[in-house]
Amino acid sequence: MRIVPWHEGGLDLLRRTNAPEMMVHLGGPESEEKLLDRHRRYLLLEAAGPGRMFLVELAGGGGPAGTIGYWEREWGGATVWETGWSVAPEFQGRGVATAAALAVAEAAARDGRHRFLHAFPSVENPASNAICRKAGFTLVGPCDLEYPKGRALRCHDWRLDLGDVTGLGSNDPA
Ligand SMILES: CC(C)(COP(=O)(O)OP(=O)(O)OC[C@H]1O[C@@H](n2cnc3c(N)ncnc32)[C@H](O)[C@@H]1OP(=O)(O)O)[C@@H](O)C(=O)NCCC(=O)NCCS
Image (tube, rainbow, N blue to C red; front, side, top):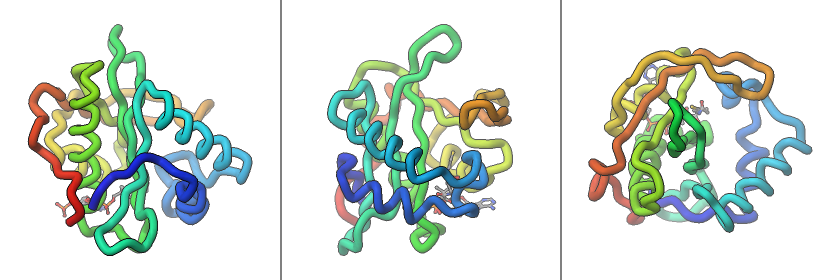
């Protein structure tokens, strides 16, 4: 597994993974217009920051298998990094998202701008909460977010101290 900078191939992955079962914790499938907007925002974030968006690619090719990134959020009176991930159904259950989370933590740690990386999975998303735990995040507690806009989401606030991260993950093809 490796994470690569977001590129034009990301739009096809966004379309492929815009299925009800993939979007159950993310507010449901998005319109084509929203997907295009998301793709353009990810290209821009990757190009200009602050933060980065990546596609997750598996050894042996076959195109992008997932998405991950980190971006800024105001949280608890400070600016922190936030991360989020998705893996296409045919690649799930093999540790891909966990490996990608470790790799993105390394990328955020190298960036050096903020000390903490947070993830906010829905309290009802056991796989995503398991990824946080396995990637070394500490559970801060439950919280309420608005995601997508206009929809209340009960989450777990997980936090990783990037000062502890160097050497944790690998971005080498596996
Ligand atoms: C969440 C998601 C990224 C997981 O991807 P993945 O590559 O299958 O995840 P991994 O294989 O790295 O690990 C998932 C872990 O969750 C565990 N898990 C999966 N489903 C679970 C469930 N229903 N209950 C408890 N644990 C579960 C797995 O057992 C695994 O832990 P293990 O290795 O100790 O067995 C993927 O399901 C997805 O893209 N879902 C839709 C989008 C989404 O919800 N994104 C998260 C937004 S915060």
